[in-house]
Length: 162
Image (cartoon, rainbow, N blue to C red; front, side):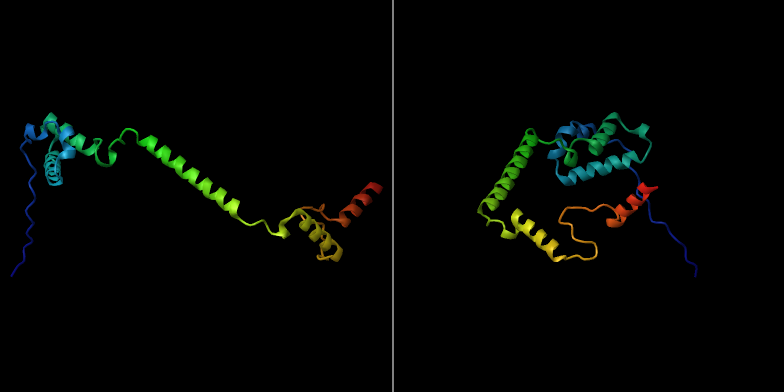
C-alpha cells in the first residue's frame, strides 16, 4: 500500500472588500470596540493585505495603517497634565529623601573621638616615634616621599660634582 502526502487545505484570503460602514470613523471607534471585534477586523484587513494592494479600497488602506500605527494602546499620547504630575512627584520624593537624610543626621550620635583631627595627628606622631614601618619609613598620612628617597638625593649630589 502506498502512502500519499496530502497537503492541508490552505486558508483562502478574503477577496471581497470590507464594508465601508465597518471602516467608517475607525479612528474614533477603535478604543470603544470590544477586543474580539478589533481582532476580527484586523484579521479581515490582514487577509485583504495578503493580496494585491491595488485591489484594496482607500478606506481599507487607511484603516489598516491607522490600526497598525495609530496613536492608540501603547502609542497613545499621554493625557494633558501628565508631565506636570511626574515633575511634582519627582520633587516630592526628592524633598522626602532630603528630609530623611537631614533627620538621620540631626538625631545621629557625635562622630567617634578617633575621627577628630587632633586624634589623627597624635596617631601619626606616635607612628613616627615608634618607627612603625621600618622598610620605607613612615612619613605621615598624605605625605608622599620623592622617588628613591635618600638614594635619589645622593645620586643628584653625585651628578652635580661632574
